[in-house]
Structures are given as structure tokens and as C-alpha cells.
Length: 129
Image 1: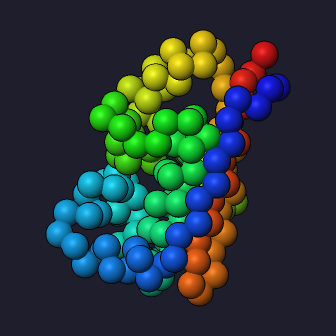
Image 2: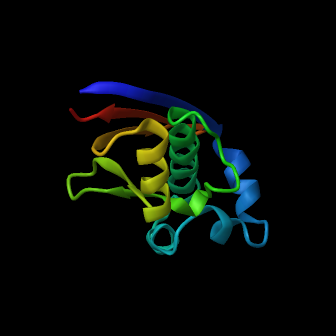
Image 3: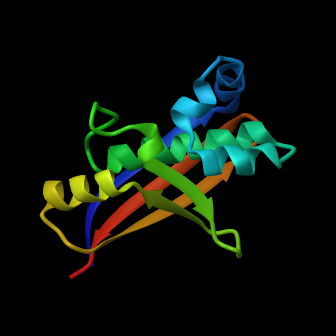
């Protein structure tokens, strides 16, 4: 495997707490599935902060940031049964990656962590040979 990109993002959890009070923030940034998961949790702020950081880290890993062709909702953060986080991409974003990097197969690695005040995400994208 060859690394084709990596990205990291850290966010102050209070920033997400403030944003959650803004009308439309949840639907603009998070998928319906992420919102549904978040509603079930006591610590919603850190949940959403980690996912926000993961989406930012992913677009840094691909070197684009968020642009008109890439939206926050094109990226969904989930957890496996054992708790390990992973990223689901929209069909549009998968197609974009294949064109940008001229690849057919790739793997996205994600690590998330949080403390009282901050959440962080790290993304590595490997080209599968």
C-alpha cells in the first residue's frame, strides 16, 4: 500500500456546542444517520465534535478542503461493533477520489480522540496496489 494522503484536525468542543444552537447546523454538517446516533447519546457535543474533526481531516487528506463539489454530508462517520471508527463516502465523493488520484482501490484509516475541551481526528488514505 502507498499513502496518498493524510490529514489531521483538532476542534475546541465549545465551538461545536455553540454551533449546535444554530438553526440548520446539524443538517448541513451531519448525515441523517449521524444525527440519529447523536440523539441517543448523553455527550452529544464530543460525539459531533469528533465527527466534525474527522470530516475536516478527510478533506485535508485528499488536499481539497470543502468546495462546491464536496459537502460535509458526502462524508459519514460510523463505528464498528468493537468501537473502531470508519468513514463512509458518498458515491459522488468516491468517484471524485478515483479521478483525482487515478486509482481504483483505496482504504481510509481513521482515528478519533477527545478530552473535555478538545476533539481530534487523524485520517490516512492508502492506495491499494
